Length: 494
Figure (cartoon, rainbow, N blue to C red):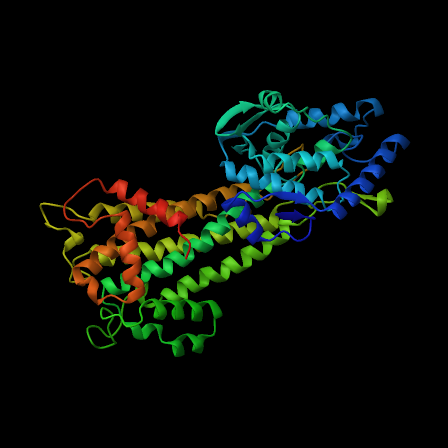
């Protein structure tokens, strides 16, 4: 069980939610604070105090006062009007994590919602009810308004969900489960949609996959080193200690560990004095990506436990402050950084693929073909890898350097963090396919060299890889192999 209190949610907790059927519950002490803050909101409404989003319009309309009898209608209108996302739906797991993150931020007790609202969010999580949320339409400030509005629609019996593998309307869901939709009270609509939970959910899932993919990359690169009879001296500990980057030192150690007692690696001067950068600089490049991962994880874990609503309620309603915690800039920059770092893993991987298939750069059969000339072998696999890394280069253009004013210039600087997060997720998917291609080519090269000469650990990875993709004995539809290997890499844990 994972207990949410608004403060202690970690990436490891999200991994458990992604990987298994773990129950998620609200901390009783946190719920007490939520109830206390809700009492403060009720008092504000009763006393007629003017508070943004409670009894005023939104954005540029914040100066328009709303009558006491209309404050609940105001919240429903907010959800309906802001649910105008477009494009393909976000993956179900993103929707699931958004529910968890929204419940967690409300549990901080600064938003003034009822306990029932948080309980309903967690009911959806624990019953695997996932709102259908369009992927496009967020500026990343005032938070992820459109995506969170679509999430919120389902709470009030509107919108669409995926439940037990079937898509249905919110109305059908509530009828099937025999539960009543929520009727939003003062401030609750605003509290549901003001925040960064879409970009943070996409980002957290991207981080989890990136961490795993970075580990797979070290392993796959080790096979390539054997397939190209790479020089092991470049991974000597003294070289990397001399520079001092911890992550670079760790990657070099990992490569040495994987290649221990390999008869396919060489020493400097034995065949070549130096390898190309794509082999020799694996620790430097892979290590730099790991540095990025550490930074991104830190920023995501802060945001996963952040109060991103506006206004925020302090001291049982004595202080109600409007600010800008919904602004996604910290996550926008982190997502752009992660996208660039993962694109670089694909870049250097594709260069290793080129060295595996290009007969001018190795002594292997041209394009690893069983019958060069009659058969093209892995020739077009390298084309595909090149296409993917070039696509990554366009996707890696920082979304955070762009901004556009909205709400009649009241909201005149925005983060574009959700765009950055979506682009990064695509970069990671592309990088995984490039790694799949490198893995296939590296296995073929090692097979040509003699698998009996491989290191014990790389030989074991070779054996597992061959269970997914057989040896290239003749030309076939390699697209199927790439997809199978990519899917396996997504599921494996290094």
